[in-house]
Length: 233
Image (tube, rainbow, N blue to C red; front, side, top):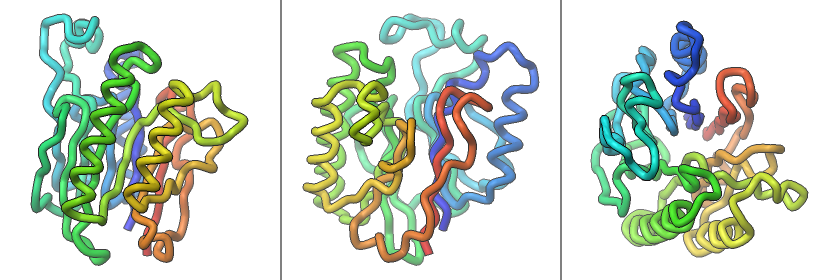
């Protein structure tokens, strides 16, 4: 089972007419089972039968300091989308439905919950980064109490490497996330990847099933983020 995440940096804001098609082609070539896109528009990725959206950012208005309709040349903005080859069996309430998405899927590992999110939608700008961290912690603790097969996926704007503190929102965010992972018996499969701020965090009891944790597209090729993938057997 392949699970990936990629912040496509809104794709449609780029001046190249072919940029979106290049992103779609790359993602179609990967054969993922689950894909979480962040800072995204609705892409046509034919390898997935299902897609699930966070609530759209309000159109033609200033939302948290930005008119996304103008910024994206008329496209609808979504902070998170989950693409899947299998249908969702349950959707969970979250504190901020425009930023986060929590869905349950049946898999051979049991029913898993993918919690897709962004912390730092405007990077270090407050009060947004702090509130998004608080929402993530509250959501995940609530979900974990219902199903311990919780997988956190998305753009955390945080490197967990000691020598990469310049790639983090702040020390409080980093330590708060580490504490959350420990309380929920989770392990970050992507914390050793260099200059990486997008992560996939899985239950500790899934560790024996982990085959790989890799980068499938480097930063600067199609986005200002790396694309990250893990494989579970």
